[in-house]
Length: 260
Image 1 (cartoon, rainbow, N blue to C red):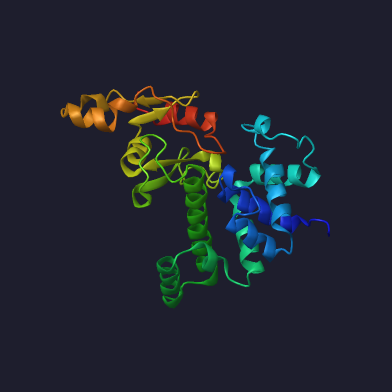
Image 2: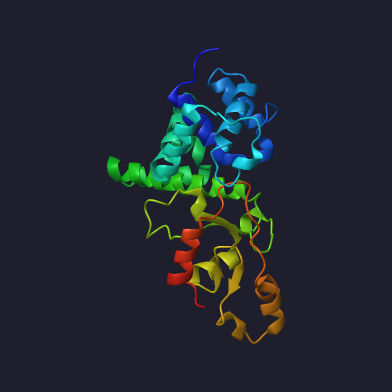
């Protein structure tokens, strides 16, 4: 078996971000698909996924028998962690190239691609189109990673209707360029809890306890308050499989946004 290249490790790390822990096995369709693409066995790809999981600080104790994951796994996990904004996108571009496609063809749906085509027809310059493609691919990637990480259910109320879910940023997309694609900056929330979190009516502390702003408690319709907010106060956030919300990001949200 040939040695693993950096590109191959990048593609495995890309897949790692998109799968749940229980899917790190040689029977998973995505594992099989990637293995075929890079000419490895599904078992070898699954083994590397577990190696990468050993670098997750929240789950190192659960990964048994892999005390020495190897320099490549350690380096690749660290490279992504140090530059999510670029590494996740570049790994998706690499994945597209292995499939002989453009990155938008594998990352975006047909409606989004048609919108980009309209921008091209409108006469926008190449650099503008490149920026638009990268922004939309990044948004799509972030949503995919966060949705899968939280099993496509709201981390507050457990609602599991995909069309009503948002990959919510803790540090706002417009204000923090470095952490735009950082999975630890994302929480899967339903539309109403996403908006409440964005506006500071909901906060989450460093122990992942859900806090409700006193401003929301003034809602006149008490049953609505109890159903949408009150029953979740002081409850624990439903935590993801991996990439737990960064407590420093949560504390920043509490200090700058939460209406406590």
